[in-house]
Length: 278
Image (cartoon, rainbow, N blue to C red):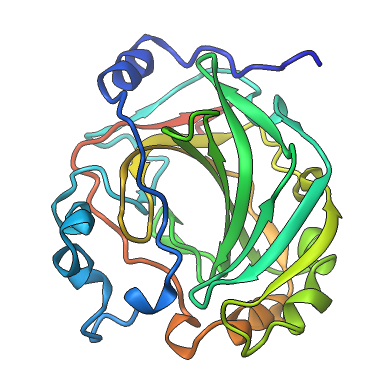
């Protein structure tokens, strides 16, 4: 197989990545009863970092996600006129997958070789994806109806890269359409799993000429930092019924399973693509 790699992202970003070369051993919490999204709850987002020592980054971290993404030139934001085609250069493969209702979200995990992408010569393999409604990231202050996270790990499992896709209400999403019946069967079955056979992640179609990139964190405990975020600037569509199904399938407290926006803290947020002034 010929690997297609992401092109270099510029000297300043290379320096940033080398400084932030951290090992990520902590994965997302699977026990959905350990935390909640309602701010007034004793297990709400503002209290995550105080609930467990290993979750301290949720409150004390300086590179937390999600954040607002903006096209304006402000301190901490750099716009690039790069014509890289990063979100057209990836290699995904159809592979056996399992659908899981984790209570706080619906997740699909590829058990075989789901393919990979590369960032600065580092290979990240596609492992799983899940949905947040409404979106966690915003663009110029606008929050969208849904956000999909495609989570990639290095072969050693110590570094994470996430590709985020935003959705607004419109025509049904083709990828979700293929999973609707399985998700419907998992309503009120928290912790339930379904083997959904061979699923092709290419159906998601993350191709885009424009994308944001920044260094952030997991958006649920333990909120581990050092995650490479790539957010597709192209907003796709999803139907109201599809969003409703994802909300109905999870626990009531997680119907709105989006973590509040986090401070930028002067981080560099890079917008790549042609004609970035539009």
